[in-house]
Length: 131
Length: 109
Image 1 (cartoon, each protein chain N blue to C red):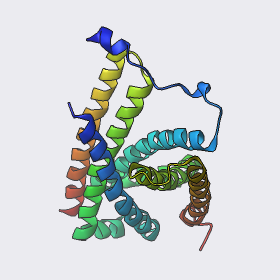
Image 2 (cartoon, rainbow over the protein chains, first blue to last red):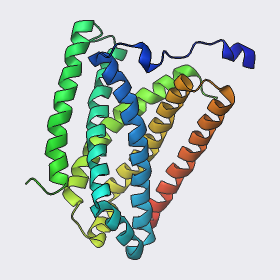
Image 3 (cartoon, helix red, strand yellow):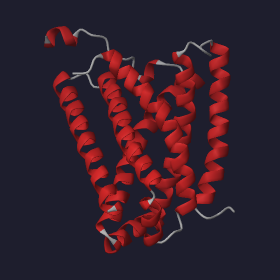
Image 4 (spheres, rainbow over the protein chains, first blue to last red):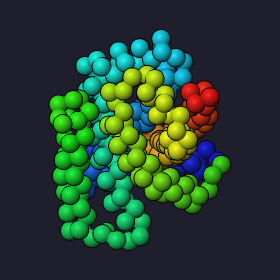
């Protein structure tokens, strides 16, 4: 059983590829996914502190208002929008739409631009720098 | 052990639902981010908000554990470590999603 499993091919590791927008976005999807899993854990922390009462909620507020907290939140906002938009791209691929090299390159560029715009709009609003 | 097909389906199913729920969540958070403790608790006392938040946690932990499983399968070649990690993540996501439901009920009632 184990012997059989060891013969199975692994995914080609990153160094093998020449960086292209499609491959960069593909690995970014995974990296943002891992980072968002961490964010989900912090969201869980928020609910936990909220449930424990006002005294514990102060601890959460200290974290959320700190510089580390704000940098992390900004990172999660960027990751969230990127993962969401690129995820929509993936869902279309599942139906066989937009798989050609040219189209996938352009949808990739659109995902990057929209991520940038949405992150600035929502992110700055979050940090109180806008509106 | 889940079949690869149901893994694939669950990943897409949770993705589509999360797409809508996350848009709702981001707009809500932007609206209530400066609110006090009492105001946030009041916001969660609305049944629609509480139910959607529970759905968000269940689907997110499911989506995250399915996604992390694929990444681990792709990049960790040692089968013992790989299977152990996948098991830990699965248990962890189950416990945390159940706990988050419990916490939300604690806030609401």
